[in-house]
Length: 143
Image (cartoon, rainbow, N blue to C red; front, side):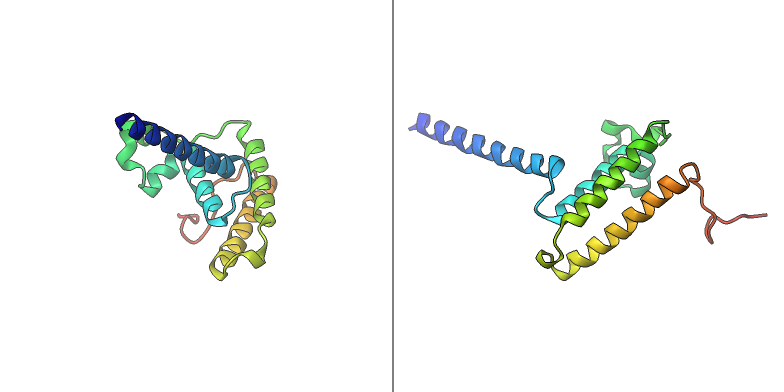
């Protein structure tokens, strides 16, 4: 009886790990079925790449003992520009693959916003790669 329970638990664990693995492979290496899952993954991976963004958001402050992000700065390296441009193009390509007819109204609006934001990011990276400090009404020139 106990042997049968352990065997059943082993089979269920195997199938559970297999399903989670398939989901993660689909999420990170293919176009996920849900645009919501894809955009959430993009936000999290962008946050994890930037210690300053992690501190700004405050979500990961409870995990500072693990990430030590509060003691780091986001200093771009010379090859980060090419990588960021490639990632933005890849993100734009994946976003355009989602069929609007299969999305609900909220997802369609989210897709349009994500495409708009990604196109702006791509333009900024290509046209103004070294201009990271914008002049605007908040951070304008102060005398």
